[in-house]
Amino acid sequence: PDLCKNCKQKRAAKWYTVRCKDCGCELKANTDWERAPDLCNGCKQKRADKWKSKACQRCQGQIQYSTEWDRIPVYCKDCLSLFPKKDLNCEHCGAGFYVSSYAQIKFEERGHTLPKRCEGCRERFKHKPFEIRMETDLFGKPIRRTYNSKGQLLFETTTDTDWSGKRRSHHKSNTGKPTSTTTTETDVFGNRSRKRVGADGKTKSTSQDKKDVFGETYTESTSADGKTKHRTTTETDWQGKKYRKTE
Image (cartoon, rainbow, N blue to C red; front, side, top):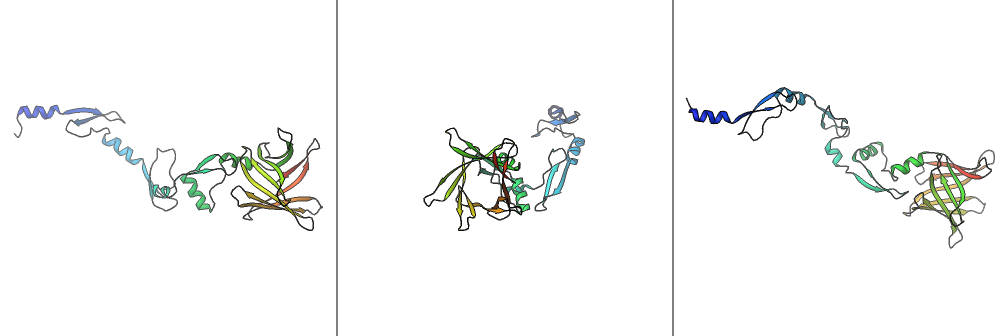
């Protein structure tokens, strides 16, 4: 014998039972252990079997994930850390919004720049064609308002002239934030052209009056990068009021 009866009893007293938190079976535990077991071997194996690995869509590194997760990760932690969440301000309404790490990687993969408008404004600008109506403000002054096809206000525009006599249109968002200024010029042939400059001083778009094959006048607008074009025509509603329609 290597232990007396007294020491055997002391050792035996240190043992107690706990239950597996998954299946409820009894497990042996000892007071000398730093941590009592909370899972039996069978449940440990079941949990281990739920873990899988897949390749990161961006760098092909390995991602560990559980089959119990509602959303399986697409990118690894290293790739996500390269694109921390960005807090931005909408250039249209001024509201704050953020672009997640996932979204930034998607924009990079597709060759797109980060959005300049918040989700609410992006949704408003999806509904085309736009309608431009001449209305009056609270003081009875004429004001031009632009609505989307759902009747939601996009812009308010007031007009004045600069020191050289050029006509200027000042645009504000539906929240009252100044967004851009459009300057109108007329050449010697009577053709009108316009340039819209944002609040940051950068050119946003240019436009020019043209005529179609039927001799009807319309305005063709082109974005600063030349990738987007819009056509604006003058229409008449059922009440006989004229408005501008942009497609």
